[in-house]
Figure 1 (cartoon, rainbow, N blue to C red):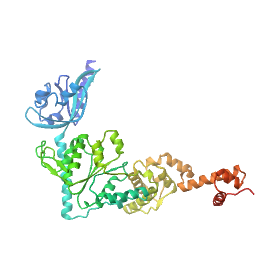
Figure 2 (cartoon, rainbow, N blue to C red):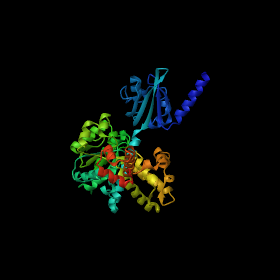
Figure 3 (cartoon, rainbow, N blue to C red):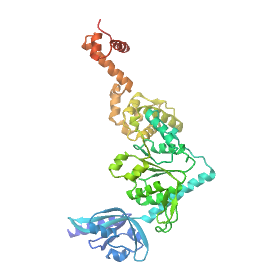
Figure 4 (tube, helix red, strand yellow):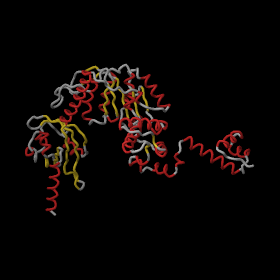
Length: 468
């Protein structure tokens, strides 16, 4: 039994050493019992300087409150993505993002484990990305390269409600007020916001889009507001996207993914037009129109406490809910034909249309990915298709196995367009009524509760005959 335990301990130690994350394990008294090479590299120490020693001896700048490991031992509750700033015994400053968990064996607390990432390095990488974006914009300006402008014309629809919404947005684009756009993923929120920017007096200013869910929350603040020299190891004076968007439009997508504390700082910018770089005491004035977007309903986000009420009401000066594709049935055929033409040019093909089964399948499919899903479906089919008409054999696997397709193939009647479906139902109903009255037109009209002249017109239309 003892030999088995020793082998398990060796295997576990080998696994922990091989993980490309900083791992630090302490006993219930805060003394280090495991510390891998990645952690030592982060902290600028040797493993031997840490193993067997209390945390506060190796990291004297920490205390019971600021040490995430000691705090977890004290509260017995895990901490996730917690930022920690400290110095080692040599005076080196370290900044990490830690996830720290208590360790229980048979219900007894035996220690805590911490998985850490180098925060300073992550910040520097994010700032390099900002520098690259800024450099690309400067090159475009220097060479006066043509930039594709996305307008409302690129947001294709023949749906009356959606068309009316575009017209309203064109009018409201003249304002500088904040705007909130929400709708399911793939409904065209970014295209819609681009259209607002191009219709606004800011059209010649910068347009910057930032997905708030795509950046770790610990880095988002420096991305938004910039950094000041010395705010952390390696930090330099650098503008955030608010300053880069000065005079233009800033599009904040998935704003409900932004931490509450950061939403409060965003509110100040919206109210006062003032930003302060991370680590700085200096205020900078910016002139930016903020348009935010969410892929869930704002009221749902409020209920789930994903967005502050004050920031919601500040952004919700103008709001637009983009319709999902399943509620824009007329757009399905329209967009299908548009994408076929688009990919004909791109792929050098001569596809003319989809067959009846595909047309009916598309009308019945719920399109959870909306226009984006439809476009990618057509793109896939166009690549596979060897003829001039897209058929069931060209469908992606997920649609090939759908119940809707099997229903359309088995009985095309249930997949007719709405007008034909109604006509078929009407014809069957009149036929049954005529049978029930032995073909008596007057009695049939009374049974159906319609005028006799109307019944006679419909009987002629459907080639139905009365009794002789």
